[in-house]
Amino acid sequence: MKNKISLLLCLLIGLSGYSQKFEGLADTPPMGWNTWNTFACDINEDLIKETADAIVSSGMKEAGYEYVIIDDCWHGERDEKGFIQVDPERFPSGMKALADYVHSKGLKIGIYSDAGTQTCAGEPGSRGYEYQDAIRYAEWGIDYLKYDWCNTENINPIGAYSTMRDALYSAGRPVLFAMCEWGDNQPWEWAKDVAHMWRTTGDIYNCWNCEEDHGSWSSWGVLRILDMQDGLREYAGPGHWNDPDMMEVGNGMSQSEDRAHFTMWSMLAAPLIAGNDVRNMTPETVEILTNEKMIAINQDSLGVQAFKYNSEDGLETWFKPLSNGEWAVTFLNRSDEPGKVNFDWESKKIEDPHFDYAVDFSEVTYSIEDIWNEKELKNTKKTLKATVAPHDVLTLRLKKS
Image (cartoon, rainbow, N blue to C red; front, top):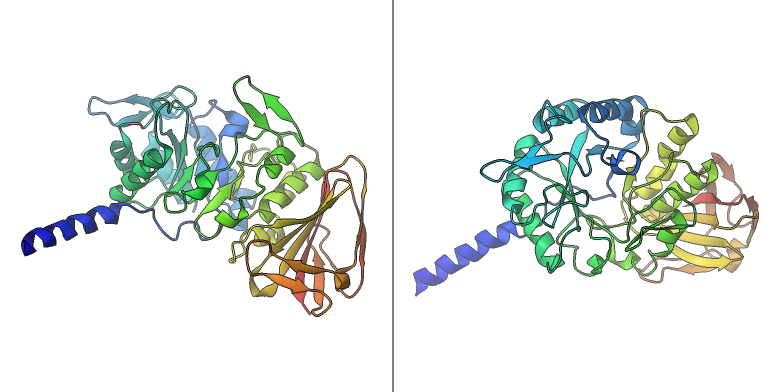
């Protein structure tokens, strides 16, 4: 009996060893670039190499972007043993050689698959091949997996995503696991121990406040997706992030809309995954994507999402607790008219609705840094008066004086 119990304990310990995700890969929100928003299925190895080069030369790597993620349509067929292969025309050198190139630039490489029988573009999915695919990814040197949810009829999402988590762990190579389940099954309630990040909505597209109706599903503009994050902040933190989808900065919105988009994703402690053609960026796009002080707010070690404090006439006020007792504050102007800020700090006591963070400005004075305008303002003893342009933001960092 004693030997049987010992054997059972060993089996349980062995199984539990595979029932986990890799730790330490997403202590702050992941940063990178993904092919889909701009290129969809029009991808090949030259694009990935050129993009890796551009991430380095543009200053994005230095700013913190590290993952080069190949989305749908890289797939070839499965071989006679069931192992996935790359499309030989799009990626003639093979994925291992491409991964080696990306790694040589000091970056990491990501790949895409799907929990169903086929991907969203009709390529081979991973259902029934999870462990084989994980082994292949490890052989190639993959660092990040985006795992989609198309063609998953009658599949349990917790089981499907846990299976791939376990497969990745058993393959032995640390892989950041990004669930793309669209928020259909409230992943924020159960995915903390399954993935490093999980999509909370359907797809984004490059519009300020719109819906693009595809019939059975929709894509959403920036403000629509922002509004869908309401009620989710308590579930996110270091190692497990809400993902409101990739960014559309540089994809056709106005400069102010791009700035507001990037700001709000940073305030939300969201993964910062660029989706533009980084080989051909305007100086304004580069300036937004590489703003080190805005990125520092996103990457703050506390890992707490911002909360909406107030909304009046299209002007919203958001507070984000930061480490060392600091705060980030953003005034977001959703409207088509200029927004007037008249914020009397000393009359305000701010209390985080979900976590134990609070500040009474009548008792503590903070210095104020204007992030986008790169200047120091007067401290919180003086009422803040400012004008925020339509579809734009004013973002401040508060430090104790």
